[in-house]
Image 1 (tube, rainbow, N blue to C red):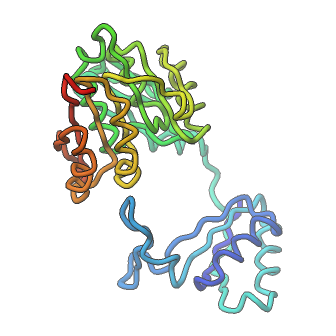
Image 2: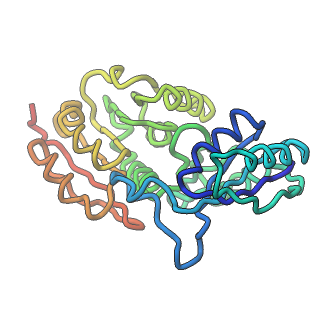
Length: 303
C-alpha cells in the first residue's frame, strides 16, 4: 500500500479529490487541515444543529491510498502536469506498513459500562466480569454504539426504570432508532412490545440485525410503522428535529406515558422545554459532557 500526500489550496480540494478517485485509481482520499496543531488551525465543523462556520480550510492536506507505487507515482505526475492544478504541491510518496486493518479498527472500540452491571460489548470482546446484563453491538452504518453521552444517558434511564418497561401492557417507541441500541436496551430490561423506527433504511436493517444478534424481539420499520400510543417514547436525535417533532411525539404518548429526549446541548434546554410545554413539562434528568437528557410524563388523565 502506498500513500500520496498532497498540499492543496481550498479551491482545489474537491476537484483533486474527485480526480484521484474517479480517474487515477485511488482507493481512498482523506482531507485534513494543513495547519492543524498550529496557530493558524481553523475550526471547520460547528456544534450539532448549527451550520458550519466555513465550507473548508484555506490549505488542506490530501492523503490518497494506492495499491502500489506505480499507481501512486502516475497519479502524482498526472495531477501536477495539469494547468488547473496550480498551487498543488507534492509532499510525500511513501510506502505504508502492513496492518491488520480489521484488528486495528476493532481495537478502537472497547466495552462500555452503562451501569455497574449493564454493559455494551462488541462481539469480538470478552464480556467483562462485572457485567450481568450485556448488549452485543458492533460499530456499523447506523449511529449508536453506546460511546456517546446521549446514548449512555438514555440507557441509564432505561436501566433505572426496568419496572416500567416490564409492566403489563407497556409499549415502547424508539423514534430515530439508528443502530437500535435504545430499543434493544429496553428489551433487555423487560419490554416486550417495542417499535423502533427510522427514516434511514440502513438504520432499520441495522436495528433488525442487532435485535436478532441479541436474541430480542422488536418491530423495526419506517416512522409510519409506529401505531397507536405508547407508555414510553424515546428519541435520541438532535435539538432542531426534536423541536419540530414535538406534536408528533406527544401524540404518541398515552395517558401517564413517559417521554425521554436526548441529543440536546445544555444551552438548548430552554427552547426544547418551551416546544413541549403545550403537552407536558420537561425537566433535565441528567447531564454529561455538555449534553443533557430531558424527560417528562404526560398527565395520567391526558386525552
